[in-house]
Amino acid sequence: MFLHEFNQKHKGENLIFKPGKEPIMSALAHSYDNPHWSYPYHVHKDDTELIYFSSGKAKYSVNTEVYDVKKGDLLIVNHGSIHSVTSDPDSPISTWTCSIQGFEMNNAISPFYFLPLDKMPLMKAGRHEPLIQAIFSELEYYAKKDTMESTNICNALTFTLATIYSDIYKKAKANPVVKKQTFAQDILMYINEHYTQSITLEQLSKEFNISSYHISHKFQEVYGISPINYVIERRISSAKWLLINTVDTLLTISLQVGYENTNHFSKLFEKRTGYPPLEYRKRFKSKFNVEELDFEL
Image 1 (cartoon, one colour):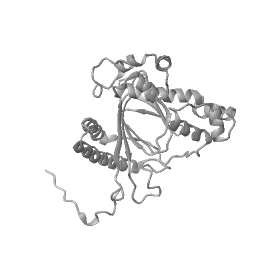
Image 2 (cartoon, rainbow, N blue to C red):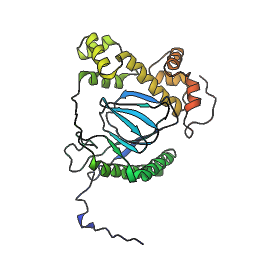
Image 3 (cartoon, rainbow, N blue to C red):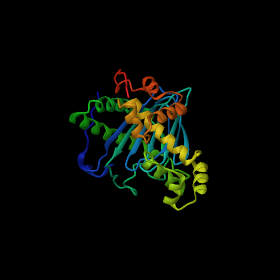
Image 4 (spheres, rainbow, N blue to C red):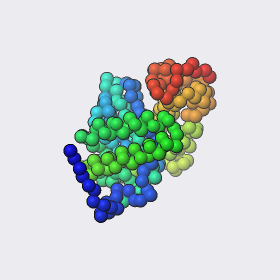
């Protein structure tokens, strides 16, 4: 038998979050069973991501620092951090991501950053792994119900998950390299916000008052891809999510990611992924969110 009576006399002294500023879930994602899965560099202005890797392997980049992740690893990506992921084709990654907003840390130098900026973002779940996996499973179950009650349950589970992550990351190592932001990062963030619109090197040059050559050279140096190819990759990656997780038509998805010509989008998507869009949907669609339907334009 076990009994522990909590002493409430210190209530409120060691709160992780300021009262009324607890985190709420803004999005939940689960990527799995896709050996071709990747997502190019992108950034969230408001969302902080609590990530758990339940199987497989991948390379995950946070602010150009690359981490080899595998089963049992945890990752925190603060809002404003530039990040990307590429799954191992031979051991596809299974990734759970809970995005949170609205929080303010208590007794922190940077209260709006979940993870202190001088700490490493990668940790091991350790003995907490079964609980973390169970919470993510329950979050997915209730998120799909999409009711007032399920939303309340999701936020309660999110608070629990965030508290567990906070406790684990008390032991996070100091990050020996904290890089200053470059204009290449500013350009990536700009593209990330405007990728559904028409973007050219000339437009970027005017926006940032930097020569097209210098923009292209520096962006390629930092991210290993040209700015215009990044626009395409960003669009294709968004299209992957929409194909897998919605029942939107091909025309709707094409327009959502910035292509008015559906045929051009389809050819570009197949060239980049190896699958026509609708075949990609049938092969990798969510087993839970998308019904068995025939999709027409």
